[in-house]
Length: 461
Ligand SMILES: Cc1cc2nc3c(=O)[nH]c(=O)nc-3n(C[C@H](O)[C@H](O)[C@H](O)COP(=O)(O)OP(=O)(O)OC[C@H]3O[C@@H](n4cnc5c(N)ncnc54)[C@H](O)[C@@H]3O)c2cc1C
Image (cartoon, rainbow, N blue to C red):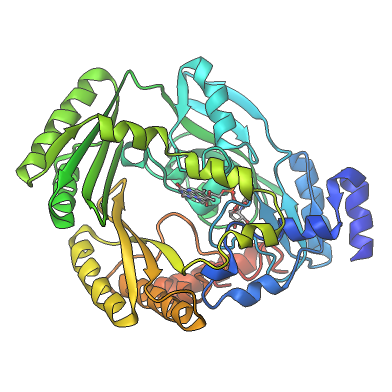
């Protein structure tokens, strides 16, 4: 390892190679804490051996060549805001911090694209686009903290996914450094029929096939009209059926967020775009809500919701981002166990799935404090918590429940996670979901990365 560190220093300069135990600790992982890892806690046992901070694609190539020669793991690190342990150095090695790749290289209002380096934080991209009358299509809670390549590698979902789709849909072209150091570039056109689209291989792949160094992403005009509406329902089922009807009709809200908490069921709708389109979508959406028993509450309750959507990330930035693991993990210490689950299911299965989950949770002494659909009727979330205090037993039962409800989603034709990736937390369930697909992934991985240097131990590999 000492020899590798010397070579990294020669390639990147002393200031861009970190070996201090304080740095190794804070770079070893993301926003997943052992409290939510449920069975994957052992992955936290190793720390990074070194942190490398490349400043260019050529630097990334140089690091991967060195690592490949010595079969040393490389873990790409965007901002470490992932919630599944994707950046945990499960087998030690080099954490490759991409935050020096932080330039917006080009904004093209005719092509409606922006070309950015991997480590550009979404908020920075937003700020650069605004003077051009443009904005990105991906708007997660984590806009102030997450990077472009991190969100591509987890295929994240945000507040504008109803009309613009997940982060993967924003990707027009990628530059990727492959494990041997070669640089792959795809072409910046929205579609191709000249061979398979290789950019897809790197979307949602959590850095196991290579390092994204540059991305061309779609951008959108700042909306001419922006309308928010809140609608109350007597039951989740009514709101859900209204959302399903809207999508079946072709009504495309920028966002639908249907949430049931203790105090009722509330639907937040956002419509954006050119004004006639917004008016048409809004009036038909409200008519559909009324048809299913919805009571319009006007724009006010939705305005605060929209204004505060990035607040949790601002709090994370102030209290946890870049801090040692002990600080990040202490935020949950002594608190009742909880987990948030984000499952994808066919529309026809969502309500039945919810009923079956309620039965499982009732048996295990676990309570769901929030049910939601976000951006599409297929994308269903639950915030679950243990009923019985802060004991080892209640934690174990929460973990068992999480496993059962994730397996149930798979058994009902769905996926166990729709936006945060697999990381270390869901590793044990991926082969079950992918079946033969897992062997295809393994074969591609062996062909591209025979020394298994790229983020080893992830994607069930
Ligand atoms: C407060 C808060 C709110 C959040 N809200 C949302 C939300 O609304 N929607 C949502 O989808 N997620 C959300 N997240 C989760 C997180 O922000 C996303 O998963 C985000 O996509 C991770 O971005 P990152 O830059 O921090 O990536 P990291 O956490 O650094 O990395 C994520 C994965 O991508 C890989 N990776 C990173 N960079 C590269 C690269 N250049 N090349 C190849 N692989 C790479 C890493 O190895 C890892 O496997 C939230 C997290 C927090 C803490």
